[in-house]
Image (cartoon, rainbow, N blue to C red):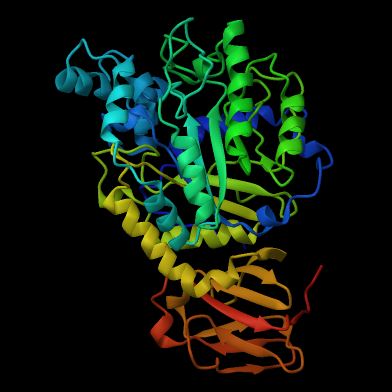
Length: 488
C-alpha cells in the first residue's frame, strides 16, 4: 500500500503547484519521456542521489518575502492573484515588487523608499559579498552528503552572476556581475570532489519584461520575444558551457521559441561528454521549441511518487518556504529532519535525486537554520550513506508490512537495503514473503553489534534495536539479497 509521506502541515506543496501545472500541461504533448533516451546516463549521475541548489542574486540584499498564511488556505481564499501577490519565495522579489499593495511592495517602500529600484541591488550585492569564500559553501555541502551543486547563474530577475559580454536588456545596458561568482564556485565545488551545474532561467526575465506575473495564465505568456533576448539566451548558455564546463545544464521555465535547443545540447555534449541536461528547455504549452527536446532527466516538483523507476528524475525543494534568502524565515518554516530524511529515502528508492535549495544572504553566508539542517542531514548520511550513495532502485520502491511499517528499498551490488520510515511503531521487523540465502549477513546501519534475526520458510524476522527507534529512518542491510517469494 502506498504511503503518503508525512511532510508536515507546513510543506509548501502549493508553492510548486504552478510548476506542476506547467509540467502536467506539457505532458499532453510529445515529450522526451515518450521516446528512447538520447544516450546512456553517465555513471556519476546514476550514482548521485543528493544535490544542493544555490539561489543567490540581488534578491538576497532585501532578503524578504512574507511568511503568509498556509498556501492552501491562501489559494482557496484569493486564487492565483493572492498567491502571486503574497509569494513566499524571496527570489521572486522583483516580480512581487511590481504588484501594487503586495507585502514586498510595502516592505520595499518602507525600507528603501520609492527611488530605489530592484536594479540598484546588483551593486549592493557586489559590495556585501566582497569577503565571500566559496570554499565554505562547498565544504558544507560535501559534509551534508551532497554529490553535486547547482548554482543559479541567472534567475528570473535576469541578473547574471558572471561578467557576461552579452546583454538581454537595451543596448549599452548591463545587468551582470563584474565578479565571476559562477567560475569561483565551480572551482571550489570541484576541489571538494563534487560535481557542478548551472541553472538559467530561459523562460522568464524580469529585466526585459516590465509587466508583473499576477496569475497562472500570465506565467505562460511571459517569455520575452525580442530577437535580442533570443540571441542573449543562446550566447549566455555558450558562455557558461565554455567557461564553467558544467556537469549539469539546468534550464527553467522554457526558452525562446526560436532557440536551437538541440544544437545547443549537441555542442554541450561535445564539450562535456559526461554532462546531463534537464527537461525544462521546453514545457509544451509554454513558449519554446515546437518539439520538446530530449532530456537526460525529468524535474517534477514534490509530486514524484508516480515516477517510473527506470526513468531518472530530480526533485528540487527548498529547505524552508523560500529558495532565496528570507530574513523572515523561522525554524518552524523548515522541513524537519525526519521528514527530510524520509523524502530523500523515498526519492532514492524511485531512481530519483533530491536537490535541496538554499539561499545565502547578501554577504554569502548561509543562514544558521539552513546550515544546521544540512549538518544534521550530513550526520545521518555519514552512517546511512552506503544505502543511498550509488544505489539503484529495487524491484519495487515500497511495501507496507502487516504490522503497518512503511518500507522503502534500495540495492547496491549484492547488498539489499530496507529503510523503515516509522521504526518507533514496533520492536520487530517481519519481512514476508522472503527467504534468506545461505550465509546471509544482516546488519542495522549505525549499530555495532550484529542484528538478531531468524529465518522462517517464508519470512525473515529481525529485532529492532531499542536505542535506534528514535532515528528518522532505520536502515537494514541484508547481504546477499533474499528471494522475494511474491516477485511478479
